[in-house]
Amino acid sequence: MTAAPGLVVAAHGRHCVVETPDGERRICHPRGKKSQAVVGDQVLWQSARHGDGEGTVEQVLERRNLLYRQDEVRSKSFAANLDQVLILLAAEPVFSESLLARALIASEAAGVTPLIALNKSDLVTPFASAWERLWPYRHMGGDGQGAHHYRVLPLSLTQSGAVDRGALLALLADKTTLVLGPSGVGKSTLVNLLVPGAAAQTGEISQALGSGRHTTTTTTLYWLEDARRSALIDSPGFQSFGLNHIAATDLARLMPDMALHLGGCRFYNCTHLHEPGCAVLAQVAEGRAPGLISPPRHRIYRELFAELSTRPY
Image 1 (spheres, rainbow, N blue to C red):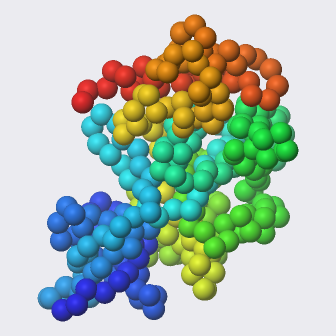
Image 2 (cartoon, helix red, strand yellow):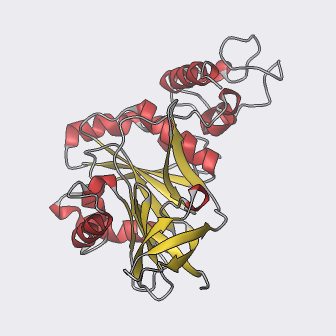
C-alpha cells in the first residue's frame, strides 16, 4: 500500500488527526518515534490494515521550523512549519514579562515572526498600564524610519470585538499562525471570533482523540477560509516556558534590543553582564531614546543567562 500525503491538523498525546489534500480527516497513530508528528507537519500516512478508518503516520516530512519549549525534564512542541506566532497577552491579569521574553526568544531561535497582541483594551486603566509596560517591545530595534522589530497590537476580544476581526484576518492572510499565550488571556475567544464554528470543531476533534472535555490539552489547526491558504493554530495555555534548547551565549543575538549593539564590545567573548567596555551594558538605562535597553529587559537576560549556564548537560 502506498503512503499518501497529509497535513497534521490536531494532536493529543501520541495520536493525531491527518487531513488529506481533498479535506478528508483521519485519526492516525505513529509507527515509531521517528513518525511522531506535531500540528503543522506534512506527513506520509497509510490506512490501517484492520479497516477501522484510522491510519498510521509513516513519515514526517522535513520541517521548515519547529517551535517548542524545553525544561530540565522534557520538550514540548507547539507546532511546525509556521509563518508567524501571535503571542496573546491580557491587560488583566498582569502579564509576565519574563514569559513574554521567553516566547519571543524561542520564536527568534525557530526563525518564526512574532506578533504581540494585548487583549482587553476595554479595561481602560489596566490596559494603559500594560500598554506602557510594552513600550520597549513597541519600539525595539527601530530603524529610525518608524519600523520596529516587533508589531504590537491592541485588542478587545469582547462581544464588540468584531471590529478587530477584519484587521486580524488581514494580518493572518496566506499564513500559518500559532496562537500562543498563558491561560486566561482570551485565546479561545480569539479563535471563536475568527473561526465561526470553531467550538463545535474542537469538540469533535477532542472526542475523536479521546482527550475528553478538556479541549485545552489539544492543539488544533483551523482554516480561515475555504481555500485553505490561511491557518490558525490554537495551543494549550502555559505557565512556564523553558529555554534549555538555547545556549546562554546565543541569548543576546536573540534579543533584538541587545543584538543591536553586538560587535561593539571590547572583548569578543563578552557576556554583557559585568565586563568593562561592554557596548550592551552602556545602553542599559531608563528612558525613551532609540537604542536604549530597559533595565527590566537586561534583568531578564541576566536571569536567563544564569539559568542556562547552570543547566545539566
